Image (tube, rainbow, N blue to C red):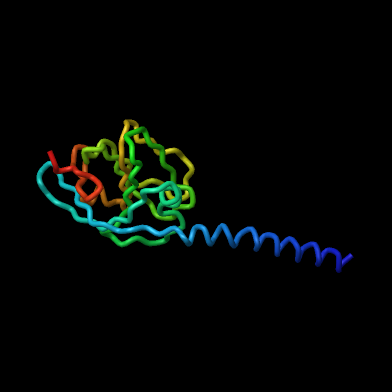
Length: 161
């Protein structure tokens, strides 16, 4: 009985490996461009970040999943291409994140601070938005970022009339 079990177990391991290789390779193939981004408080204080851009469905699906570290002045900007209510989650995301839900004009509408790593709870924008900016958890509190502040970048025209 030992030899048939070993063959079955070996076959199962090979099948699992063959299934995982394309899944891992697909995730590894997703790359993100980076761009500068500024948050301008209602009091005029400017905070500058370098953000990765999640602009297509594969990039938005991957997001910051599986990342263990992100530099203090970095983040990820999700561009949905349209204005709509957005729902996010933290599945497979190991970093606590602050999520800023941003209107097409660059105004921060809603903020959800310190999203719990690995949680599958839905994080709702509550209002129609065009962008989500994810920053390290605690950044919003540390920099006193608030709804009504303006986000400006090449993708978001927050300061243009």
